[in-house]
Length: 113
Image (cartoon, rainbow, N blue to C red):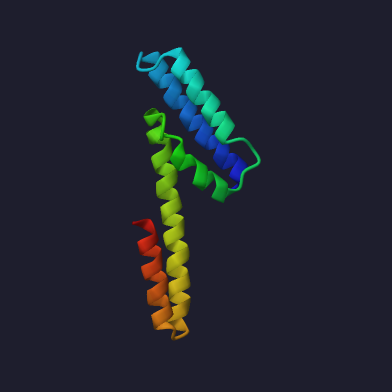
């Protein structure tokens, strides 16, 4: 996935949230401006995918309205990490390194807690 396209998609998702909340009166213009400023300051290009995955989970720390845009990114990142860890563990198992595979899987699951 291209980091710039992904960054733009996240910004578009956030913009849709802001527009919807403004339209139904759940957000005022000042809050919308504050959110937009924070997003633009945080997600300024160029960013790598890893940087995006580090930044996005913090976006809803002060603006809980953004959780609808944040959670899918976190979920997607978790899925990708699981695939990488599983592939690594599989290679270790195939090469007879069962203890190393177990340690890698244990370490990966503990890192999430």
